[in-house]
Image 1: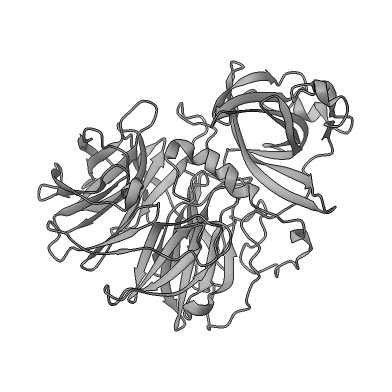
Image 2: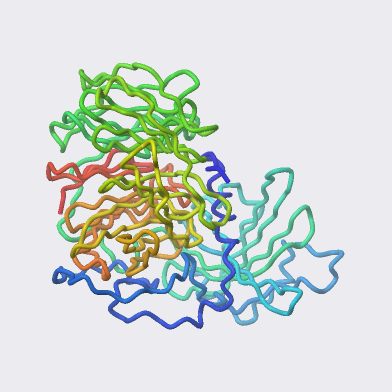
Length: 554
């Protein structure tokens, strides 16, 4: 399976969670109450003080996957059995809402961005039950309009205690109609209820849903731990997804969005409080740029169209196009990484390529590597990688988290992999108490940070985790000393003290997402995408839809 284009990623996320068969998950033993934030509660992000340094001991944790089944979300039901010939998913009479609370639903505001999950129970032929989950999102606009899973509403009735939404979309010649019926408001900003789905006019699925309003997590302020906004600057090209800081300039790359081309935007950040836009660059037919890195006078940009686009930044304010390097298959390059004199380019499809950049402006292709899937779900692909101690830690999509020995590029060896069933997306690796520890992040709903002992790659062990709200997603992360900086999309920047990696504790945060922004949508892929902490006292982030957001380093 190869990485979908950005426009298809919300649909792909639905495929991710539908693979979860978790009918027995709620019977697993609960983790110890103080074992990090391994239980997805609303206070998962609570700040905590520093912990003593770790002594190297830990208890192996069971792998439970990304999505954790919390049971039915609401007491309503949808009648899919009677009169099947006349069944319509928009038939209000089929929804049993006798145990619902219309007074509470009447308190739901007329506007807001919501993300959630739909939980389905499917009876199997052997008498068992398959529990699966799909993401859901909707945006309520004050004028009565809005979107549902990025499509316009067919029906919206949210007045006087009613809460009914429906939408229809066609993909691969299949038309799917989804309807939500609200039932309860268990706490402010959360709506639960039932849903029904019909495909090509025939009933397909029903279940319950829980939707969270994408204001900041319950009880949180905009920031904590001394983090504060230094400045922000809109990016005129597309949606900003990654940033690299070099020569006192911030290089922000973008994907096409809202009819705007993607490309490269350059800011002079000598005065961090007042970034100065210097230039924007898009190449003809080539402007879907997702990753960026610099070495010396060279800037490397990951392009889905052509591979790696090479720029000369001898004049840092005005990069000069040099040439395009080959990519890995049909998806060009999705991410890039420089480690010493090597440039790694990950395609997101299959291959990752290695270039010798001992002469930064004259890269030479040295090797192409196909990471093994090692028993994953059949969708392996080198999405990203982290180089550490002669090993390459590859986020191999649904193929798992793979460890390769790359000391000799002519004899690359697979050392092992950790397969958890999620979409292995990004990681950071370091040494703690003499052990090699990886902080591994997945993507899509319920993704979180896993802490893995990778000292012996032939048997990787899970030893910790950190979770936020179940409806948001992790993106990128950086390990700076004993602090892990996580770009957590709609949950902004999260700074974790990992001095004891078995018990990650949040010590600072900044909520970057603004629900009121005119370009805010019902897509899970918003908020903080890219993050850099170059050691100059600032945190640089690429944000959708805010652009370049600079924070002070806590």
